[in-house]
Image 1 (cartoon, helix red, strand yellow):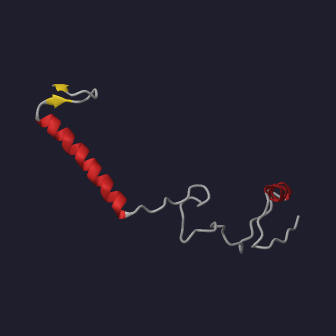
Image 2 (cartoon, rainbow, N blue to C red):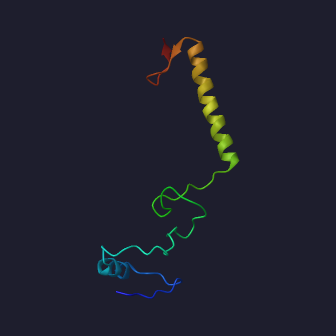
Image 3 (spheres, one colour):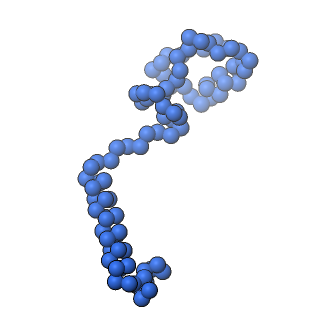
Length: 95
């Protein structure tokens, strides 16, 4: 089955299924065929972009806020430990 597709036209699931079912599984792979990288790939990827897209970048303000929150929680736990108290079960008690 020889198909001539326009790059700007989307292929429906039915058309893609028909092409996959009509393809010869024992046919050799064309050595001049370019690898499919997806629409947004800008460099070499370990896994395809459509399978697991890159995470969106977070702003430095959000990262700084998260670090402050983590630091406050750790400082609170260290202060509780310094006074000889225990908060393992969620309630403050003597250790």
